[in-house]
Length: 165
Image 1 (cartoon, one colour):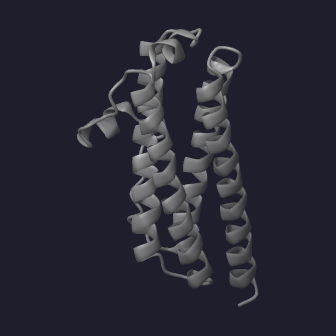
Image 2 (image 1 turned 135 degrees about the vertical axis):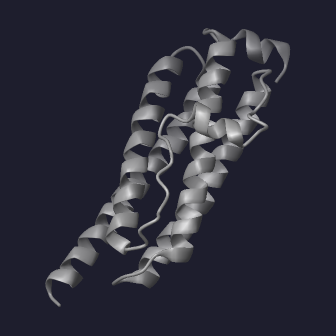
């Protein structure tokens, strides 16, 4: 980003890039959680869940890309060492050690709910202070809300299937 582009940001840019790096770390962990979950999940309605987890993994990776671009535009450096993701994460990482479909869906719903809270807080911080970051965060938040809704609908479907067996 050019000097004027940075200058119009009416907040502590270093603090903002630190917060964006935390979200960046969350996105990489979410990507992996979705990706590995799609490979190991077992249970009723498995194919629909695999398709949704795979799609969400792709979208989480796209969020990491958006965050990387913005961090660089702000003059920061994205996290370069994956080991730092665990230190910086807002939402943590819950390994899908139990591949049962209900457990995997519940873990991912919990992750999406944390992401919604994280991005909502970032929106409040950037509102009227950094329109470029704000718009990017709004795009990501919209997808995180959609992810939560998709996962909850799949969980409801699985619960109905299990109840009727």
